[in-house]
Image (tube, rainbow, N blue to C red):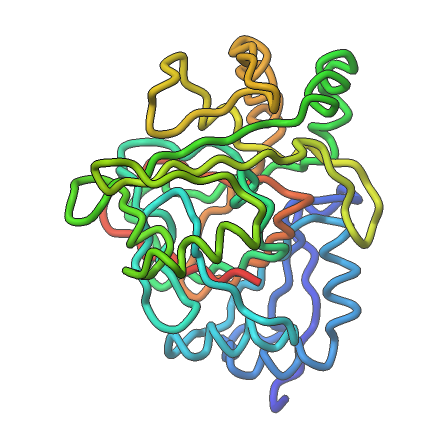
Length: 310
């Protein structure tokens, strides 16, 4: 790199596990995200070790001149980039494996969750880049899944771990309003959808109106593959519905209903310990999707955050 990169410890990093850990260039002048990509490639071990301690790393002060700069930074980790096939919220495809953040009403908060934790096919890393910061609010919220696991009642944790969770979604047939299976699976070919779901060992059924019902049973408490730490890994509070015919629903793996009061309690615990990232132009955020839950606060004005999954 032409510019020397040094680490700047922010006030919130007095804590051993500050969330997120923040890295900035040593110079007052902005460094380029393209240059940072080279540094990332040469320092992967350090970055991943730091990520496993803190759960998220924010690179701030690096200018991004194009979407390609963002993609290069994500690819610098040497891991394949993933599509969002099977996702539960609409996103726009910006370029190959680069998406907009969740298209969800700006006046609403997005609750804390682990990305695609409703499926056995979930990303391990999430990369975010801020192209346009919101006029007001719109922070990305982060919460430590390890702390959440430790604070959940042992009886409920044992019960939910034994029974597992069953997530069900009904995807409409295009051009219906709402989420369609064509958009969700990024294809118009039913055979492609079936092969994808068979590989996941998911249960599915095509309905008379052309929609498809998909069910997966997943573990809500898992261990991180590198740190071996236990985490609570779920979107049950977002998917739960008292109406079994809802287009999205979550229950125990044996089909018995969840206790919504306990789900609300877990959600409140996660929210109580959350940290908010106030976006700045060019910010590059890496989130360990297993260790860390993420969400979004409501916002005013324009907001453009891109996301890559790996």
